[in-house]
Length: 189
Image 1 (cartoon, rainbow, N blue to C red):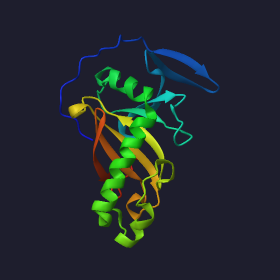
Image 2 (image 1 turned 90 degrees about the vertical axis):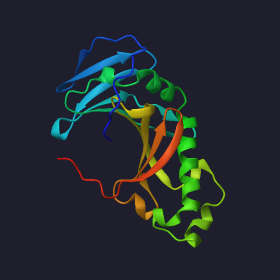
Image 3 (image 1 turned 45 degrees about the horizontal axis):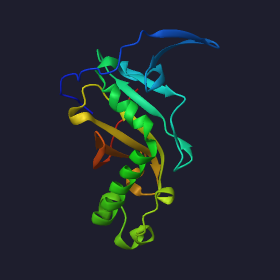
């Protein structure tokens, strides 16, 4: 996702990064009010990912929901709307249910988007969050994201569109607005 908006004001106090020792390695962490501990991981091509440790949990799906802040190049964690991140952590199930409802609507409006026929969609007519065929949700945030946008990324699902990388729901602040096919995405490395 390419962001073009300027940095949002940081309503939460900035915290100094601290380093803590883990067996065999050092991990850079930040403790942020309303968010908890974020731990830094380094990825390919200069991408850095701050992940909430431990991840928030969904009671609705009975699973942890990894939360990541993705940074590239000179991006800084303080360029992310940390108040929004804290709000999402505080209501994981509401955000997951809203994302799944949008996918459900799109499934019936555009079954071809998912690679299925109208007949194959029939078993999902009744919407039930806990049994909807998308799995392994995670929340991804980006610096300077326009309109306070972020993503719910379902890493797996039972629809052809989910192969091989899952499906993304774009959220603007609290409202899911789009479902994205990421099957043609490239692996960085």
